[in-house]
Image (cartoon, rainbow, N blue to C red; front, side, top):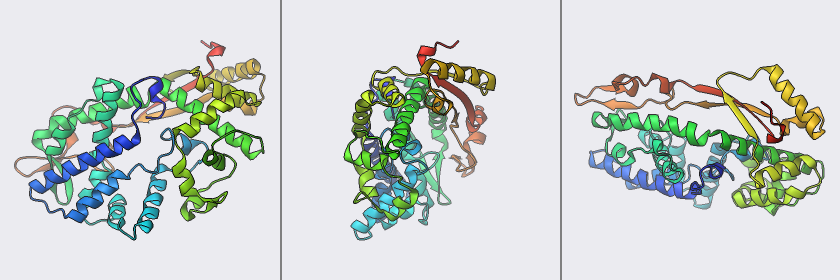
Length: 375
């Protein structure tokens, strides 16, 4: 949930709880499919369970924040796979099938679809869980109902026609949860502030400036860690990089940020105080890109107000875009199974127009310090 708790105080649940919930739903889905006559061995069931239990293990603190700051260019999916392969070595190859399912290399393709797909147990769990803890009722879905309606045709997951309304609600809930929770404007402001603070800290560290940080965080701040370091699991200051990464958690980040509130670098201390004191940047979101002359006017006012050079404005003026696509029919369809055996994509089978959910909606935002009070 990243920094969503700043907006939704109940959203303090962890990725570990989500992994356990997804594991429970995976076992439920396997039981349902077995009851409908599909053969799933104990080894396959165990491997699919391992794959879903470890599917997010490569995420760093505060969700995607580290991917854009102190370990740039390295996706959590890549790190998840590297950690699973390391564990496979430690457990003498017992995760081999789980990794094949995770990578969609196992013959029974529906097992991968349960782990990662348009209707996977990952999404079924986090939508229900996040809706409950944030109090956003629009995200409520019928996960148990959907699982009971699952079946397999041609080695692909399908949903019995009786469950079509639950699928429609699932897609709409997913769209609304992204706009109302995951892409909430205040959450965006907070997360970009945190990315800015970590990026500035990394910049100062590589220049030789002293920053207090926990040992594992310090290793990533003071060293240029690349994707090759992760792939070879090479040592960083004497410790394998995967082990260092696994040691990082939210407390490392926040303890560092709190200590940087009094750092002599004006930019780092300002960003750290904004996060610690919840003095978040003002943010504006709209459907069209912001005009360059308006952005330039804000940039000039920031330079004058804070007395900084042009190269430092990037820490005070944040501009980017966000996208929301509830259903990507091109990557993997949600197929509905009719009583006569016919199979149709949800867009065709539904009696309501779901085409809008298949389109990627892009919005643009800009955020800057509230002190500027720019209209």
